[in-house]
Length: 348
Image (tube, rainbow, N blue to C red; front, top):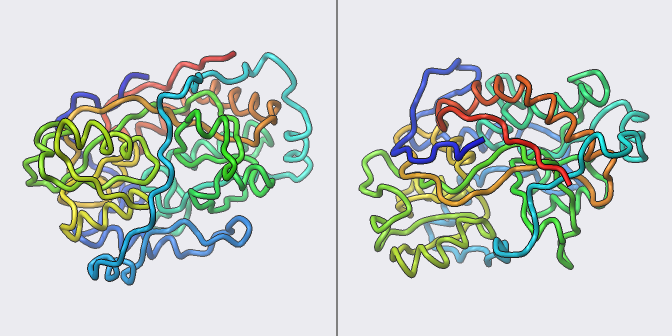
């Protein structure tokens, strides 16, 4: 797949069924999504659900409460191949990890529940989105039943631990494949990734009448919000400040940044193009500007060493690439990111 949305000066807004892309009036979209996130869903190890900050959190931001300390940024320059994964035909696809799922009779998938277009609650309170479609395809491939899934909300800062401790079988959470996650750290166990199922990069989200045109000199003197430890964090820490004169404001996640944009406390948001599409879709009066910056890939994460399960996931992605991927993309993301095709698998 090529760089989705690259070169676009704004988002192409199309008409979508109300049940799929529910739009909410300007300034209230994130509040609605935060309320939706409070719908009960199992969480790993008693961790708090991954959800949007509440109105109380926004009041604290207005009051100037100090922000959370930045997480360690990812290291984009490390020497590793983030797109190579085991060939589904190269070995066993029925080892201990797969047998455990089959014996249980259901797949336990770690997901988000407030990531619009990817994994969010629709008007009926059901999880829906591109990632949810993929989980159901995996359950069908493994168990012959798309509905044989137990969804568990996994906070971003516990994703790798949730896999290591067996709290979930897979993570399908628009999770970037990084050398840091592949190698692990003392705090975050190493995980393995599938072949990429989505290629992305950084995009800039601005209010509709902003004079910012992308990741360029129009950012001079402007405050841009991005998630701690993200590719955007690295860009704003380096080139964004040194060359373009942007001021960075880090927050735990993209939804936190959207709330600051709603409150006019920042001038723009820099995040993955896929997540940016979800923010633009839920918030009237915003648009994506400029071309995509850099290249990142989303992958399905599994516990390190569970190659049998990884081969099953890669086999599912191959099968989905025949038609299911395109149908899901066209339903959820095409209106915002333009035409695209599934990434070609790379095995090794």
